[in-house]
Amino acid sequence: MAPLKILSLDGGTRPLITCHLLRRLLDHQPGLLEDVDVFAGTSAGAVTSAIIGVSDTVREGVERSIAFWQLWHPFEGAGPFSPRTLSAMSGLSAFLTHEKLYQHLRSLLGEVRLRDVRRRLLMPAVAVDNKVELKEYRHWSIEIHHNLGAQDLPVSPLLADIALHSSSIPVLHPVFQGRVDGGLYANNPSMCALTMAMDFLAADIATTMILSVGQGQANSYMALPGGDVGYGGWLLNMERPLALIKLVMEANLQATTYQASRILEDRFVRLDPFLATDLEPEATVPPEVFNQRQEEMAEQADIGAALAQLEEISWIAAQGAAEAVPSGTGQLGS
Picture (tube, rainbow, N blue to C red):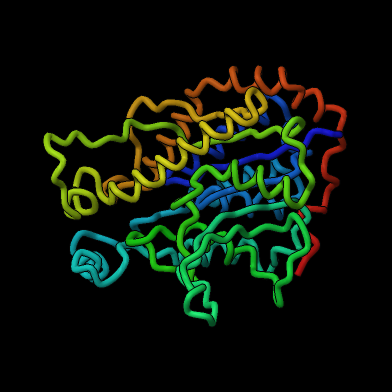
């Protein structure tokens, strides 16, 4: 059986690190990702996967993703005394919106629907209400949007919509179309991609390979002299805002990374460099500076070990003999 290749992109607040790491990999091996079978992404990784999905080549998709994320200004219009910030501090609204991000994504993806994309995509999200009529079966529920196989849906969702389904962090962003961030349970979507590939593509664990690319590991921690911490410390700490949500997302990411590495062993290749300093978007830091820091950190990262492991498991050898996706097949159109 031919090997099945999965590219998995983490969620997080440093998407340009992921994109620049992908660019560097492609600089060393131009055809490295053209024969990937499944592109999985969570949150920011879902947006990047969607952009790659509609591009003629992966290289083009990565470059378009870099251009997209360079225009991302999460704190635009959200000053310390803005109406939205004051409302959020009172618990009446989310701190930020993703209206401009969505508008930009729609301008890029247009009316393309998930069924129109020829590249196989997978994006985790959470429905806050599954809307089942029987009350005993009504609950919030995980959702994994994908086009790995036929689905019984009356209308295929817009690609931009499902990317935002996966990218709406509770408290930080409004709920989007009844969904919140897939990073709550799969900030590293590798295991979701592996199991769905087994279900829909008859993937064999013995021949499945995953390249999992993160956003860099920062020194996130809370030094607590005592354990009696309320919601103020977990959510409103000015030094670690929304620490609880960050903890949930980073903990499940670490768990997934461990599980996938034990199941696939050396066929799970993880590229997630340690960062010299913590790096998060801040209202006081100009977006251009934040973007530059992400690029610098990605350029400083050692990708040699990941490339060597890919060669060792024959990912690189296998892709060299495969045909690249022909030009013009990124999407079928709406």
